[in-house]
Figure 1 (cartoon, rainbow, N blue to C red):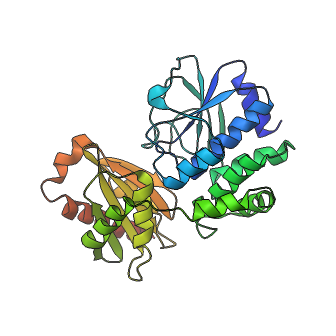
Figure 2: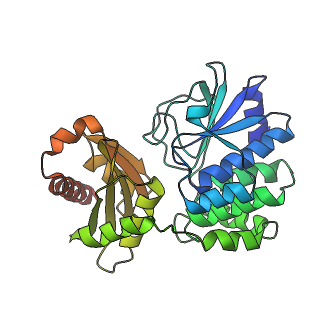
Length: 325
């Protein structure tokens, strides 16, 4: 049996929905779109559900141009009997809110941190979750329509940062198969519309509030902003020649939301944020990129000098990790 066959076997006759991580990015959306198409070929209808919003201009353009139909979780009328497929993330992670229904399957490429037992799990450490979905098309000899190919190809490019971050041979193989099938004109439009005018506020905050110490660039964005923008600012800070690690965080619902980047080969960003936020929040991710949160109820633990405490925690975590290397 192929992976798709195994998934179909688990689904049975239940109603199924595909849930992306909160505030989905192009990879989560493309992987969900591709899986939705695959299930349709097996006569299974599945809605794409997400929490948060589609807050990146390119993601909005992508969903509109490729006619990707989605439902915000606040508008979803499901039941406890529904089967849920988690994609590009895992149940109980900080960026995966609980959706009504029974989570029976997970397809993900991030480091495994969940203690939840799925009936079906396809976990592979590759650059993009869309690469896994592309493999489903290949191993089942299912023809890929132009809209799906375009979504998957764009997602792979974005999630691997044009094949410079976390890329594996599987990502390159998927790209070579998708490239002649995708709408290259649309991909060029997507790549040319990365920023919105409001995004400049976050970049301005980064320039004003940057604090660099021991190769770490700390930036506190003093207002709520989308996850993708926090991540973009984190990558922006990494372009400075004196910065090896970026720690960017923004106010979020009474707490803090983090994006971490690392260029140090023997220091994993996921380990750093997990250790630094231990006791006040949670975090994790890849070797080069990770995310985290400080829970709202734990903010009083940081006192009046939040930024100073955050810096001390990350610098201490950095030293502890280096001792073990």
